Length: 160
Image (spheres, rainbow, N blue to C red):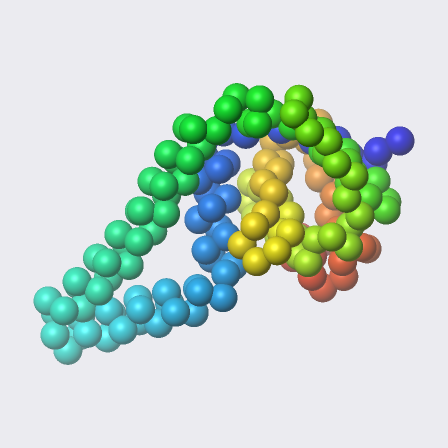
């Protein structure tokens, strides 16, 4: 019997924010942050140059968001609906086109945001599970507890 079940109907917002959040948790975030700081420092010294750097950084974020939205639009409808079932030792996922059973250890990290769980498989590749897909808050708490128990400090979730 699963401790939690998520019936996911992925929206464009979930998909785009998931991709933007992957950038936030990527090692590239340091390069991006330095780019923004350089732009801010240049605003103080040379206003035109600094604003250009900040504008380029904003443009990169906008392009990632736009590319993610376009990718979501091309995704077939049957790939936007799936179910995740959470157990003590594994996660089962099923859709109309595939199913899998994954041990918790497959995920090098799990990150919780205000509205999503991101289950990273490798580098920036992750599964997005919106919190609204759970039946109630007790199931969200169960996922937090399972992630912490299975992954320890690699699970960046709120305290259960």
